[in-house]
Length: 102
Image (cartoon, rainbow, N blue to C red; front, side, top):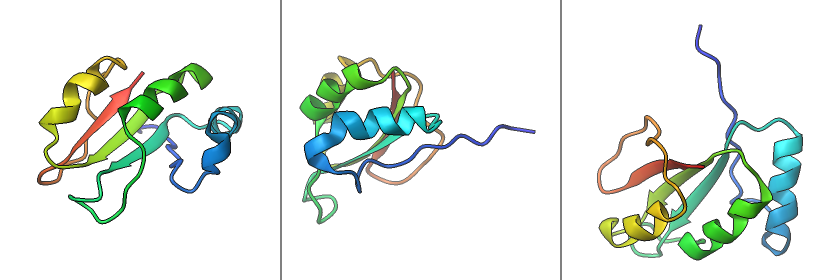
């Protein structure tokens, strides 16, 4: 049987304490950290982007499950690749991409 992995989203975290919030999730046993990247165009909300994800990387070694709800996606792939994209998670939709970042 496949192990279920827990990937809590930081979308509801206290953004003024994101580093500590991520450490708390890791201590609590999260397998990955889910990060929703929204551009205010593809979806109506606006959230964090590659610079913040890169800054958060130093707070944990567990993978980031990054859900890109942005258009066009290709403009951000290079920036995200610099944060060490591993294999994409197995989730599909039209016009967005999901990656696991280590």
